[in-house]
Image (tube, rainbow over all chains, first blue to last red; front, top):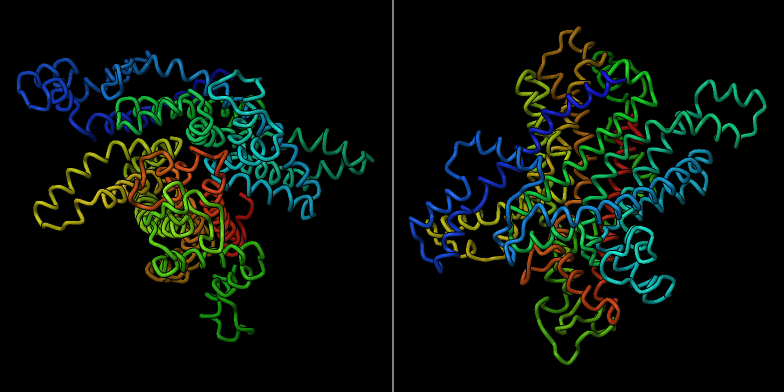
Length: 317
Length: 323
């Protein structure tokens, strides 16, 4: 098992380098000359070679690329991304992210939990009664929920549930903790995105399992259908479902940008949106890197769980 | 598989009933799929609306009428008016046109890049393949919209500078238009992020097809490589590419709106559904129609393309259902 873990983590290193490389080269080389824009800002829009050189020194822009790339990796590993020169008061980017990230993580985890708790039973039901009205309703409903974009679903949910029907309390702005009533609607809207993937995968996996010989054997022993499903089918069909959780993480992160904007939650997504709109490449690069790291961590976690639950994977992969 | 059947009929003229081709077979399967057909009708309507938007829109989408501000839907204004008295229906129609235009360019360019890189990687192997796979895996690991936004922020100054240079060289005045710049930025960032999914798909398909028995059989009877490629590899990969493109088309429209919602896509005076929804969010309580009209339009369009994509998938890839 230890060897398997080490091998899986080691296999991620090239990918990690590619991801950090993307962010580094896009952020440092793709855009404006940062030293230039800082010079212009300090010197009232007039270019001055001396100040420009000083700024380049300050930003360590004159070192070779390889050195700067290694330094970027080192700093990023410690959560240091420098300060944002485009935002008011030049805030420290690492600190902004450190403050916002826990909020986004809590929101994301609540949504992920909702996805699993709702999506997996729905998938099992639609597989057990496949091609029935219930199946079509579940898959169709999940398709609709997942296809409607988050920034359409959330306002419409606000209008209908809060404005018209008054089922939910007024959604206050800000973050009230993972178990607050105010969190219910944003988390549910966020969970709608990855729901279809989970329902579909569960359904496909359960359908596969139902066709196995040992299920026929279980039925032949006279087990009631619900016992067959609970005892034999679910246990054996859950490992493939695990793989979708990595994808679901990516979708949750993309969705959180919109949900946090609509519900004014001060998470990673709203830090990113502020930076997008200000054209603040440093902060955008840092948040993008953090989001990619979260997806990667989720994928590694899924891999490890997979290896723990399914010894065949551990031995062959 | 039908590809086999039709190939067999070439060498065996006596093979009785006339075999159906992959495409007629797919068309039959597709036409039996109710959700897919509904989606197709909506999708064609959307394309028609986009093509003839200026004729359909009853008002100019930027015309302000201060006597009719924030009105609900009426006979005069089908979807009501916004806070500047602009006709919402006309704006939605023009927003659809914008989204379709972006989606066409982005779908086309991602298909080109994806097929090229995927096929090259699979056919050349070695380090070309390794680099292609690394880049694709890296791109796919990002939350796609996040990366698209990042690329849009990064590429905006570059594209602005480029456009300035083009203008200086050619005097094309549209290069100074901010809306044209917004379009270019959206094309670049969505294309950059999106080709990887298709690239991986094409690579996997080509790799697995090359090992299939029916390709081996063709090789064994001495079919020239060109024949194998055109007759067997291309139709089999093409099915997947078409399925991918059709479902991506809706998502490309959605992505344009998403970026515009965040204020980094098509900005005013350009018309975009996403920007309209964002503007409507300011008073969702008093004027829900400002959010609901563009929002529901976008939702219906995305759903229609998802249904078409699913139905095409069932029709063209009968073996790969439910993935």
